[in-house]
Length: 225
Length: 225
DNA sequence: CGGTCCGGTGAGAAGTTATCACCGGTGGGA
DNA sequence: TCCCACCGGTGATAACTTCTCACCGGACCG
Image 1: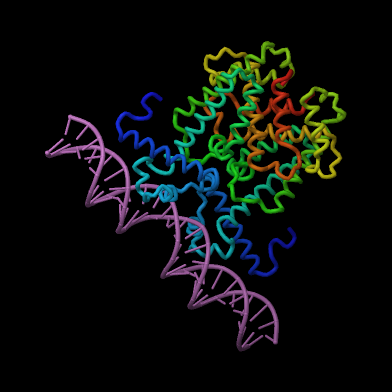
Image 2: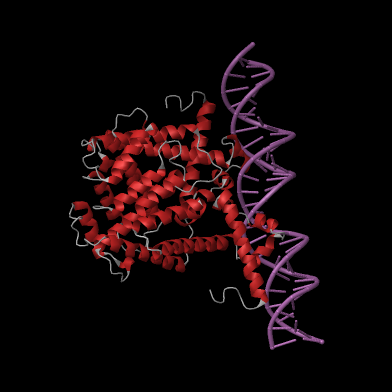
């Protein structure tokens, strides 16, 4: 971030134009979704002509990859900021929901339908690990009965045994099997509610998705999973 | 379904061609995803030329809408078949997972990232209600302690109170608030695991998604939510 | 002060969806 | 049986899209 704004005027100008392109791309994605993103339309909006954008991005896929990276980075920052502010697991859930509701298409860019041919660049897996690490921190704090007093039922027991044997994704994080399982369920359950809500599958059903989200969050943080 | 195969030879031929178009479309979606579907490629594959397809579908969006409807219909049939075979809530979960794994892009066509401008036709909401109805049937069977002996904690209590007051989506189904909440959590939690698994967010993490899915399913069907 | 690199343009290729007018065979009614 | 209407298919065309190419001019660096 120290040399991000470029020393030379050329680099400054280049970064500025790249930023404006991404800005327009985000507006376009928010209104038309990712498949509706058009390089030509962005160029026309900026007052320059078609091929000029290829000086800044190798192509449409490259631009989208960059946007996905930025979105991932933004989510990691939001979650880390919440954790730095002293938020527990419930606070992280609230931060996640706020981030998702602020721009649904941005959320779907990260967690939505994948394009079959697409492979994420290497550094986003690093960002994902970072998110998971702060999640594990919070899960470990709420989970001080780590030995599994609440997880002695068959379900949690089998999962925790499996996770204890396959905890490569947690790296060297000092989290017990119960915390691993709690973080994983935190992720999948909240994503389940959020994803269906943002996709509009709850519209017309009459209930408030926030209540369901809050209930799942409560059942995640209180007592037995 | 009685007159689906058309009386007159013309209708028979028309239905046959429509079916073949959708068949090719499914193959193409399975390999390239929904945004990669090309009417021209389908026409070329079938040995006929571009505009001929417009005799059978009003356009690309119309074809995709039809595919979404078929996918929804297929999911409802799969779930209903499982229920008719005597499956409980766990069996429905297994059927859902099998249906999703059989063709991930088909699952994403139903539950994936929505296109901002798109509005689902009216009859798919009817199919969704049908799925929810069989879900509620199963939830009511496993949920004979309906008064909330397991739901006396604050979380489930608040949700069930809210659902009791906003149960328009359940229609006149004879299911208690606990069953409503259980069906809803069944839907969102399993979708959360499935969606992340199919999108590839678990690849490289080392654990088996099936174990996580099974654990969520067990915690859904056993004891306290 | 000169050379080099860089950003921008216009033309053009190869795609896409979608609409148009036109034609021929098939099927149904008189 | 005949005949006409309808229906399916085609080629041309328009308006898009991404992306590549050759070219040009100005700004920046040494």
